Length: 283
Image (cartoon, rainbow, N blue to C red; front, side, top):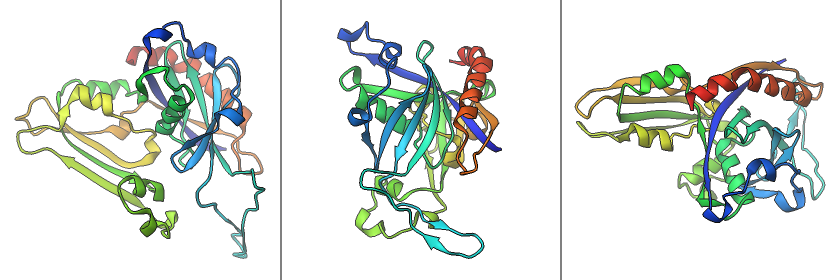
């Protein structure tokens, strides 16, 4: 058995005015075609595989550096041989409730996160969203909301990104030619701290809530904000990693060390039924 975390997101989007009758529920009644709907997502490719009417598997087709297989006792290594049109895939299971615009997403650090899912949906439904706007906004727990509503100004953000990839360094502006020889496994974390000037703030609470996109809790070692009720105040430090709405379940693992798909589908249905009313009160 393996402990798996599931995070809750609110889907935010608006259709173009001439598509007021367009429905995501209707669109996803039919399965997608991999020949038409396999898209580039950052340095890899992504595909959304339909499992049931509400459960999907978001697949990451690895196009970057492939791992090796190593024997823990002998140290023997071998590569993974793939045919020309084959890829190693990482899977993330998702529950999509389009009626309430709620998504439940399995945490899988090796696979795609909610930001990549949003990019995929925007590519899939080109010119259907106003300003290509489609985001997955993490849902904060009741305790987290109660802490935040007492403040209006975000004074600082302190975060540490766990096990960053070469692709992340590229996005941060590092020249790819210079960092291509780095090994992902050698990177421990990337730390970033944003601090406002004295008696100033980075942004107000509403702006913070709109740009707040943590993807998954496991993407971070640390994510803390200092929030205050005024520009004059020193502020209170709030640990956002403790405030997200998250559920942890034990899932069976097969003999090939792959998560049992039937077990995770069963758990997703159970999680949705048990938590949906609580979630609807938070959004």
